[in-house]
Image 1 (cartoon, rainbow, N blue to C red):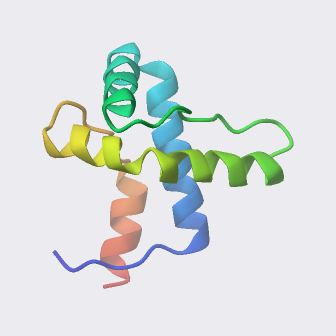
Image 2: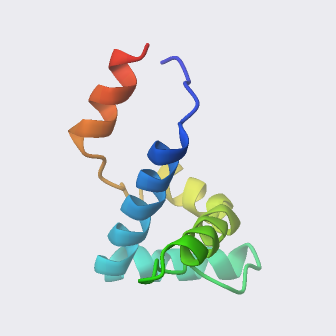
Length: 95
């Protein structure tokens, strides 16, 4: 599969989707906490608040900070973050 960089709105969508998944899944959250401890990452994911602009930055930074444990969990197929068809369709039509 050819890697295509995400646009800014797509990146925000991915961050929102990942945060929503972890806020609703206690299983994934527990595994992320264990992996964060293994990678010595003290702070976890931060949700997006009502003011949005500032909290989008902090939420994105928290996802970036937790990428190594997230990649490991997804790579081992311990968790699977669902992706809706809209992003897949949008990315395949731009190829």
